Length: 299
Length: 327
Figure 1 (tube, each protein chain N blue to C red):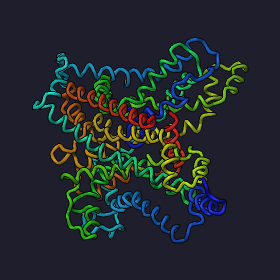
Figure 2 (spheres, rainbow over the protein chains, first blue to last red; figure 1 turned 60 degrees about the vertical axis):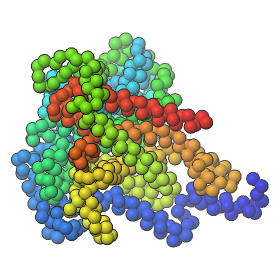
Figure 3 (tube, each protein chain N blue to C red; figure 1 turned 90 degrees about the horizontal axis):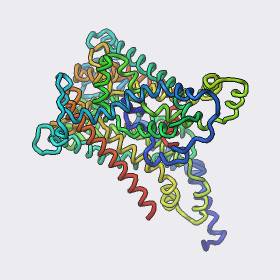
Figure 4 (tube, chains in turn orange, green; figure 1 turned 180 degrees about the horizontal axis):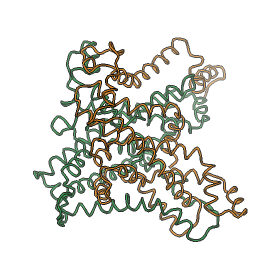
């Protein structure tokens, strides 16, 4: 560029500020506008959740008031008390079912996917490449295509309307294997080779060397699996029917049809279904976000 | 149910075509450590392979089988009918074709309205968040937060907020002087906003996080070089950021199209398919026909058509992006 040093210098300084310096060095006015915008956006994302929480502490009458308030005028836990004792909408039971299903599926995925991923990442055997391609290719199968046939299979197994239906089939998804295989491939070989020289067998190496080294990856996978199962709606909606056998997500749909505009009651259900995952998210925020973005990119 | 996503998308981690071509993709994994008998690898694989066979491979083939039969779940006889289920879907005027194509159209519209917003807004947000400033992680976490909720929570919450009579949205519109009592959940065109808006609110954080990861992979020197050449912010965006984001962009576009095409919970809970069946999505239709009315042959044929359409769309996206690169 035909620029003299004198004209280029201020331009560079200005440009450098933009990417590296962030908001430092901006005028107070610009910084205020910047943070004002970010905070406004935060409100857009968070305020619906706060309103759900607030509504859950209102009476049904107040929840449909023409002048909605952010703070309940007559705060009450009546909605919670009602929900925890209702026969046709046993929310506490749904909560336990969801907990069992999500934890059960996460454990099942950890067990079967870690073993399979280890074999695919680290062992040599006939058909390894073919199996790897076959398993990873199913990542592209849209879940809807398996909905009808899996319903028939699950009914043949006698699992309709029971927890195994929402625990076992989902554990066959290729994601866990894909995720852990990527991680195992990145581990150094030296430790395994040393253990092998010490006379350890494959199982011992897997159990005593590989798994302890993989704790962060296993924790992330467990977390993502738990969240996925906890939030699953389509499948449990169709395979569970009896009121006390539902999980929370299809239960919320039941609440909506049963209580139509008793929004305080319905929002109690929403809060109960959200609080566990939001708490997990607050505690393990980095794991969730990094797990999601990493697995999304390192195909 | 075989999806592994956090919030009901088509497996976020699932590599889109764009992501599957990385060096680690399907390449041989280097040396494996020797040892163990010839049977050992198969023993390690067995538990997963049993699940995989029963709940992924078998149903994939079973789907085709069902679609070739008049398969009523509740009746003992399930006669073979060849391609009749498909022909019925393609013949106009049959009982099954009208609602099916209406649901495909609804799905297409939802993709058309939601994908551009979910591709563009998160990119802008990611660029904003990619600067260094105090509180950056807090804002990133806040924008991502709705994504950890299930679609059922999102559905019942927005059904409430968009309630024409007592919902917060109409209340604030009224305060702004727009006294329309908009029928968000029951009438066109409002129903589309009632489906797309909450979806953007819910999943925007996911795409933002993916873009952010992509932005961090763009070498800082490229920006320095552009600045030395006198490039302004816009020129930097066009010449450095966009090309650098291309693989991520392909991934985001493809997964967002697939996620939107799999829409189910929003129309089920927010609009319940209204008005009529206008916002009943393809999956909603397949669930209704196959798993409520138990006409599984018809539902299976519909699932296969939808699946092929999705595969086709992702291939087209992939090719379109690649060609633009070569030009």
